Image 1 (cartoon, rainbow, N blue to C red):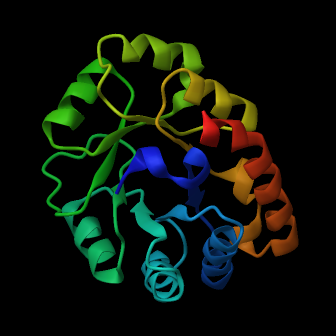
Image 2: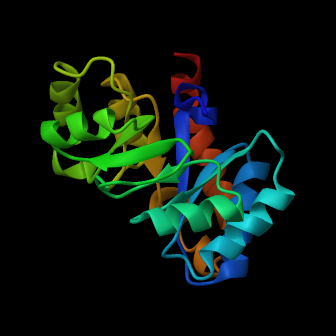
Length: 204
């Protein structure tokens, strides 16, 4: 998985209370060109959503499991068809063969995550420090791929990418209430607006 090649440099974060709506959200995003998504394991029947989505998505689409807290979570997500894992923080002794986007906030956590073989680090919650904090972290860690998550909307996404992020993770500003049963046409509209806003990052 190449995080630097995500369409629109965007990882969509799907979390919802309705499993069918969550599935439709993932599929609708893919139809709209946002083909990299993580389904949070806090989603109702998340493993079912991952399994069904994987069956229906194009093989090139990237589908992962988020909010992975344990090796058991990792194993179950793998069995469901997840192609990568996302953790909210550093998970000690996470056993998996899948690429991991490991949650970090501090320099110590970044060093721990990279030592544990994380593919990239999820800067979370990124809103605590914003793009300026990411810039500061990249000074001692210029080769670490950062994916900011938390409070990311289109303007801040562009700022994070300008500050050196390889991609951004976005939840409610893009997903809205779609994964809870909200209007999919509204989701399509938000996706189109997101694509337009992030277009400059695609060609940068």
